[in-house]
Length: 115
Length: 119
Length: 214
Image 1 (tube, chains in turn red, orange, yellow):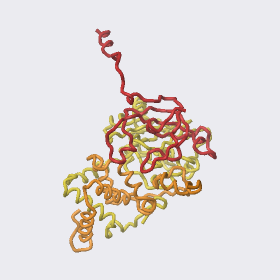
Image 2 (cartoon, chains in turn orange, cyan, yellow):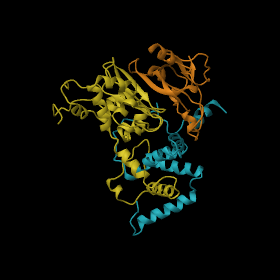
Image 3 (cartoon, chains in turn purple, yellow, cyan):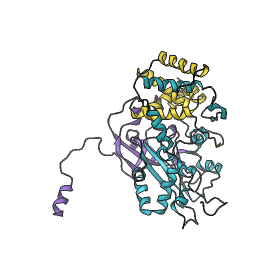
Image 4 (cartoon, chains in turn red, brown, cyan):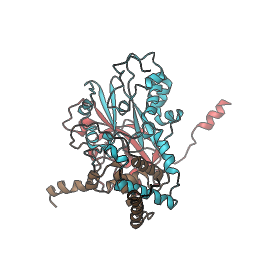
């Protein structure tokens, strides 16, 4: 009986996932924040633009781009946010604290490139 | 456009006046105040507008950013909010500037006149 | 009247004095929206009640529960929102909560450099200083010297993690339980936990004047 239940719970084969369903990055991946300068509204601070870090958490579930929400777009393509770990020595050339000190920040998938 | 010009003018556009991370700043001061009733009502209004999907939180943030550097610096926290709400409500054609001005006149008259404010 | 750089402290008489231009605007907007039936007449009042029920005391209860109940602590660190909901603390919309555990090796600090994101559902409204320039500018750039101005010295061999809120995730620092509290009740423990400790700018300490709170 339990074997039948086990069968029923296994994912079905041959399902093709929509492009944006699966996260592009996984925990531990090295990424770089895009060097991009939008006007009007953004949720990625200037001080992390172009910076390198690692994915610490893949935030679930997918969500809309909050930058687009700023202009009233409450719906749209949902993608993942990633909690990134970026060393403060990467952000600030003259950082005098511990080299292990770090920033944690959530960034939307469209801002990230593999590094 | 020369590179020097880019460095002085471009950040006015690409760095929003509300963004503070990494800026030079003075010593920390333990500034606190008891929230005034109107400030709490303003915050309650924001929550309700968000719940009703009339002005979501991100629209509010963008509306505050759009006030520009001088207003962001010179108005207080909740003053930003209510002015941003007014602007956004005008843009969404929920209120008109004239309506708001007339109502504000009416409300102000309650305080300067003999009548007790209704709220 | 005030600025993000300089702080805003209205005089004590301000509450009874003639309302400011902006208070008049708030009243006018609210009344117009009710007249037009965009919002209901009792909604603001109800929302104020909800807001008033959210204070740092809630966060302190969450922390104290995590200190005494290891399995709750595990659930809290795995999914902050779900664990708080076990205690009846509901959250707005899609807000998530990541609880950041302080250890002997890691000290966490929370901030919002873009605006004023704060775990309001469990902590209530943030203090002014959290929303002003010195804190927001320096937390991500020089956390150690900033913390020192709070009287908090973090040893060099302890890693500082600064979480800058930018999306739907909010943060709560789970401070370390102070030494010498082994036989304290959950209520006594909650009494030790301050708002500032849950932001991460100070540690939780036993007040010097008494061994046990009431």
